[in-house]
Amino acid sequence: MKTYRLSPSGRRSAIVLLIGALMIWVFALWTLRISLATGSDPSAGFVQALRENLDRGLSIGQIIPALLMVVLLAATPLAAWSILEELGAQYTLTDAGLRFTSFGIALTCPWSSVVGVRRLDDNADEPFDEVALNDDPSTQIHNPVVRWLHRQACGARRLIIYAGLADRDDLLREIRTRAGLHDAQPAVQQA
Image 1 (cartoon, rainbow, N blue to C red):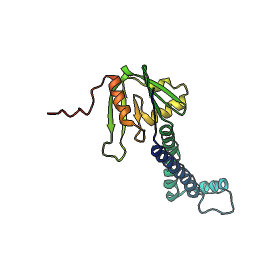
Image 2 (image 1 turned 60 degrees about the horizontal axis):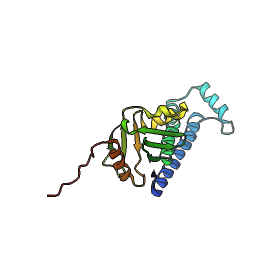
Image 3 (image 1 turned 45 degrees about the vertical axis):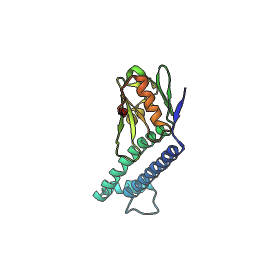
Image 4 (image 1 turned 135 degrees about the vertical axis):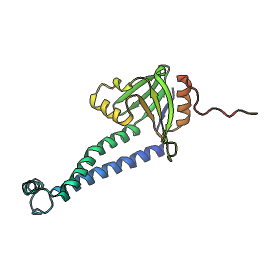
């Protein structure tokens, strides 16, 4: 059984994206702190400065950036999880079905549940593919938090085949063959 993993360049790309997400999260935290504690005594601590600003009332110039930073603080960890799931992604073709493993995730998608394979964002530099399923494999994940995070990253009835995967076209061909799907790109017939 062959296991498909991210290529070295795919891993490097994922690590760069993860570092970027962490930098965005730190920026959002820092900007939130500055937004909520501006105009106060610089020698006062953050909590005291925030209390003083709340007593005075926050201006619209403080509220809007603070709300944007709160959204970034909430969304960035979700993006980081998606990147971590991609970084640890491993696909194994078994007789029982397609096995997907990553950090805290071990799913087996039976061949009978695979209903299609399609390319997403075909015009992108590195398009990725999805395996459409007729059931939700995330129910196999016992940890409810990890199950929820996986559903946010992939969706309930699909499995993502990431762009940076080594031998991705071979994996897609094997999935189509084992699931009994007609190839989306018919072979050119010789005259």
